[in-house]
Amino acid sequence: VMGHNVDTGVRSAVQGVKEAYESGHLIASHTYGGEDLARSSGSEAVATILRNEQLFNALLPGFNGVLQYDERLAKYMRPPELEMTADMLDMLNALGYKTAFVSHDGYDTKNNWSVTEVVSMLTRGVSSPQSNSYILLLHDVPWSSIGHAALLGPVIRDTVDFYQSRGFRFVRMDECID
Image (tube, helix red, strand yellow):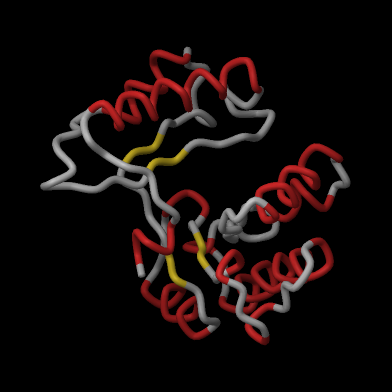
């Protein structure tokens, strides 16, 4: 979750994060404003990450950063732009974060693609669950080409159908990278 999207008070964003949390989903960080950690100073990176933690603390019951463990708020970070320096990775590790990268990016924030084109990006080169696993990236933000329910729903449905028809199962991030 990128805090700025929630902190602006958009009811749907706030409610979406709360509903995801309450239904057992993991809530992961993406910095407060989408700052590119590969191009940030250490102090800038820490500030944006801690600002996101403060927002989670105010928004979600039981969240207390590193002081209270809640498996739904385990400290995962998907770096903006999927870029990370070794120093930033060390800093995230020191803050208790596990860094998640993706195998398939739908490129939905960079292109004005159709449902079919986004699903194609998310499923290209997929083999069997016996030999590979995948982490997919989609955005549910307004500026994404599929950022509204009319398109996001079909992309998720078609992508899930594709992977499940090949024997894959969907799991939470903690099962993928822990």
